[in-house]
Image (cartoon, rainbow, N blue to C red; front, side):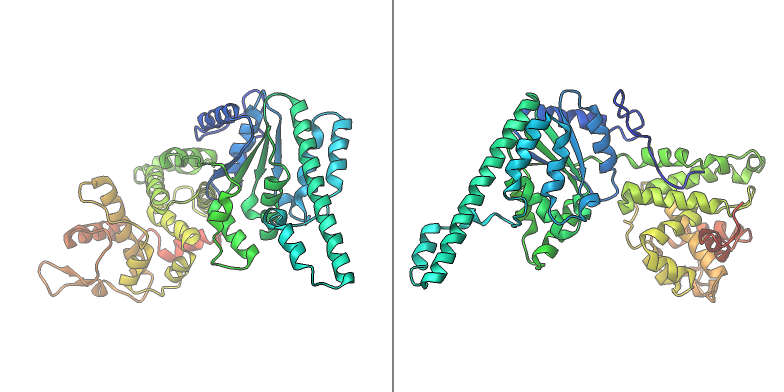
Amino acid sequence: MKLAHCLPEPSAENPFEHCKLGREEYADVLTSLITTYDDGFVLALNNKWGEGKTTFVRMWQKKFKDHKTCYFNAWENDFDHDPLIAILSELKQFGTAINYKKLVKKAATFATVVGRALVEKHVDTAQIVEGAKNLNGHSLSFFQKRLEDFSEKKNSLQDFRNALEEYVHKLEKKPLVFIIDELDRCNPRYAVEVLEKIKHFFSVPGIVFVLSLDKEQLQHSIKGNFGSSEFDAEEYLRRFIDLEFRLPRPAPADYVDYLYNYYGFDDFFRNIQRNKYTELHYENEVFKSLANYLFEEAGLSLRQQEKIFIHARTALRCHGITSHTYPKIFLMLIFLKFHKPEVYLKIAGKKYTLQELTDYSFSSFQQIKSDDISKYNQLLYLEAELIEKYISSSEWTKDDLIDKNTEPHKLKIKPRFALKDDHFLEALSHASNRSSYKSLDQIIKRIELSQQLS
């Protein structure tokens, strides 16, 4: 059984062979974009953390046939204070040793220069000289020397950019595609330094930079670097990014099916011994159906979905092969464990009232329309089953849930998904008929992996 989601290294012949998300078409769109605008620009591939950006760009890189490409993982290189050398070293793989040596020589004159925005763009030297007239001789001499150094650095920078453009031009007519990944996970200062170096040192015709990032998280890093939550990080990023693209999310059902098969859930749910028991036949479909809804409703990233499936598959090994798993409660609790751990812990510790149980467990879920019968019944029965299990394992009783002094009986709480009291009471009756198989504590014990694995 697998405990991690690992795809094989993409092959040069068919790099998207193992892609289950149908993303090759987006690689073709982006490649066409780069081919069309071959004078160089910066493209941001902006998706949330855990949505498969790294997998996509590694596959996409292998798909290029007529372009030189670089892949640079910024997070793995942020131990160095200045990314200039790290980025420059990636170019060593191209061209001749003589051309690269010339490029390095040009870079050496300012390799130790660290600056956030190359202040020469904002300096009026005439005003500075005028303001320096009142300085004494020693100070004026020192200031003039600084101006000369500044001018020299500025010329050196232009020399480097000219050499870089020449170096890239000699590679081939197609633009060089430089992919920078994991920028949003870097040390904030390093992330800003990478952006600044790209903009001021490497922005020359013939290089297309692809920044694979979570823009929202990168903006937090930028604000942290500049020490102000009020800093306009979005406007700051506009200085560096020319175009932005977002990979569309795969259909939840497609990815759930993929994860279900990848982690071998049918090895448990469709085991020959389980097939002997009719009441266990549909647990796999109930599990997948609820996963589709939970993941879509909560907007979980692909990585979050993977983590839930890994834990669920591991926890299933704590079940007897012919035991009831209560797939709705089982998956719902694992979902809360990863998505809302504070809610999960209070359920496990019996800290909620019955009203709080339903309010907090389903707080992020939209009310279901009455004409969506499938979802309505699914969530209605999930809610009833959760409350039934909670009552059977806590100090609360049915008398705290149902007012039996009325006819027909009325609920003392307001369920999240029941449009009518009798709908919920019917679902609760169904859950009560199956409650003897396993308690809430037993389900949680298996989720916590505190029972020996089979």
